[in-house]
Image (cartoon, rainbow, N blue to C red):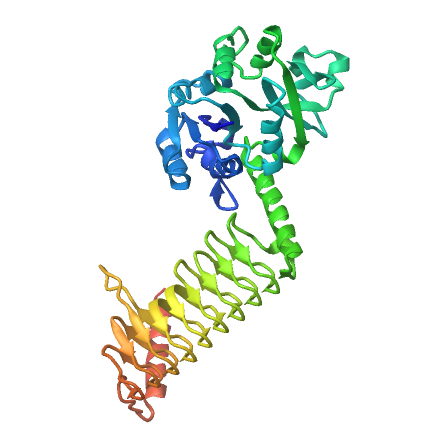
Length: 450
């Protein structure tokens, strides 16, 4: 059976108190909407329709970045969840198969849950996803009779017996496309909000003699985000799961609760992660590396045996070969650091290549930007760059060369050469004392005048 995803992402999210559409708020540095799209991708959907509303252009852009063939349907007026699904009708007019309705602010669905929903469709016309709530509070209750879902009862309408039910409605469902749109056409808006509610399709389907059931999952999978507090909780849930997976894969984290991971972080076994490390998007760390405390990595690749930090920053395009060393207060951006090379202290290496076994002295800077364009610095193998060297790009340092401490390099250095570019030192006896006396007298006059 072909599958189409309809992901509802039109809500403004008033309680987020934000100009950003709710579904674009990030969890593990990825928009919630993208988490939902990735969850649904396990079903290999033939079509994906994102129903947008508030901030439609931004939501559409985020969706396209994840799936450039995802279709966009705009809900101009937010008139309820059934009305939102109805906006996908035109995009799916030629589709024959099942629709699975997801929510852009429900990011934690697991593959097996969606697969069970689709499997249940083989014996049922409509499948609802429910969850066992620790505190059912005001969730709608799923009233089951055996395997049949008889109805969904909202808290305010429920009897005491029905309020005792802990199987609650998540809002997600699976149904044949033609059937679903037919059910939605019958949904009314005779309620206090004047909206068309998707859960109403259950009662309509039952009245038509259709077979309806519910599939249950744990509550964490249906965790929705409606406020900044919810967002923080959701992010904490993701981090806890991701850290646990890494520990199971053989990664050592000295203080797991202090390590922040992105949704796509990849770390090989026997890597050691010290406390307070942040991983941004696009990071791969191979087996046996060490990431020391208070380092920040994004868009980079760290090879086996490399050591990063403490207090290091790897920016997009940083590529560390095996056994490279990046030390404290070092920033690497769009640069290749070859095998065994060292950049250990207080340096910035950007738009550069650094050859194998080269040593970069403390305070070295590749001056890569001229105010308009970026330029490349090429440093060969077994080069020694003296402390406080300024490498004014574009410039090449040949294999085996050396720069003297404090040198400003403005032209290429041939292999095995020593580059020295600094003013000659001139000591003036007694001048320091005279200068201090003059400054102290000036300060005394200023203080007296004040």
